[in-house]
Length: 166
Image: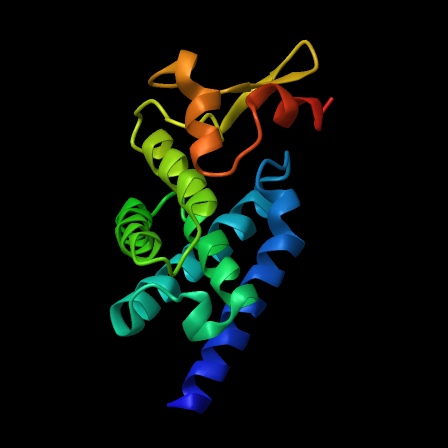
């Protein structure tokens, strides 16, 4: 079992490394590069689905901090696999409630899943585009409360977040 968990941790961190290497192609003008990105994230999403079915949410306690963050990244990028994102969100919510995962990452996954469902986000973590050199978020459910909600999960105010990009 310990060997399986160690192998799982390595597999998850390898998936995140591949994700980081190819993420630049997500919005590439080259159709082949975009397709390669989509295939990679779909493969990773499928594998995360299998991992969640076997182990539940891969928490830091189970697989270590780096691999747990890698699992979150894979879920975050499973944009065309809403079933996987919803399952990850559900399991991660349980892990956060149990103190086994961080509310900050959960907030990002929560927003990402809602945007992919065509719904308004809560925390303003997902960026729709850039206008006049500044990132513009996807529509938010309660825009006037975004910074208050962000603070509850340890995310900096939206204006500070945006300032990092300009």
